[in-house]
Amino acid sequence: MSFAATLKRRMATTTQNPPELTSVQALVQLLRGRSYEEIRQRMYDNPPGSPWWAACKTELDIRNSERTATALTDTARVSDKMRLSVDHLERLTETLLEITNDMVDVVRGVRESGRRMELATYVMVGATIAQLFYIAFQVLGKR
Image 1 (cartoon, rainbow, N blue to C red):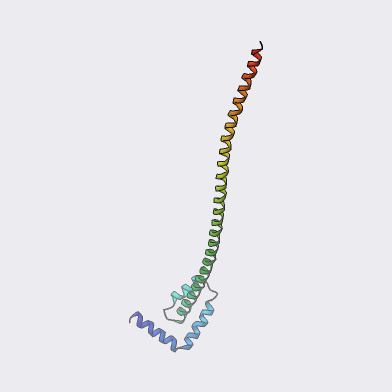
Image 2: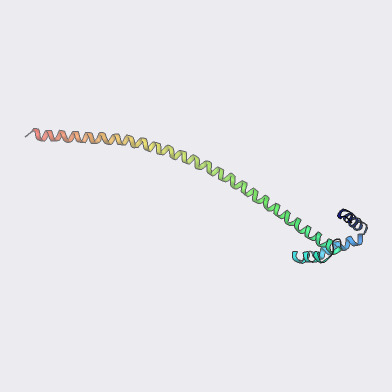
């Protein structure tokens, strides 16, 4: 018998047999507090299609769905936090760029001031040398 035929037969049996369905629901409730390992072991110990196997499969599916939902929620939270962090980093980068440009302007101004100061120093040194020569000529000229 093919897998599809077996599946159809089991589905027909399940829908036509409400007591079996209620027993599966009761078994699922019984399995709620059990560990994954215990549920898997019980599932492997029972033949596919049996009430215990169906209850174990249902409980594992429920738990996996709950874990998936929790993981999706956590992923969404992390994604929001990452987006906020990226926005904050972009603002910080823009601020850093503005400050860096301001510092470049200050350094250019300091460089220009340094050149003017260098010229003023040369003028002062030249004037001092000229005054020293003038004093030397005054002192030596009186002799």
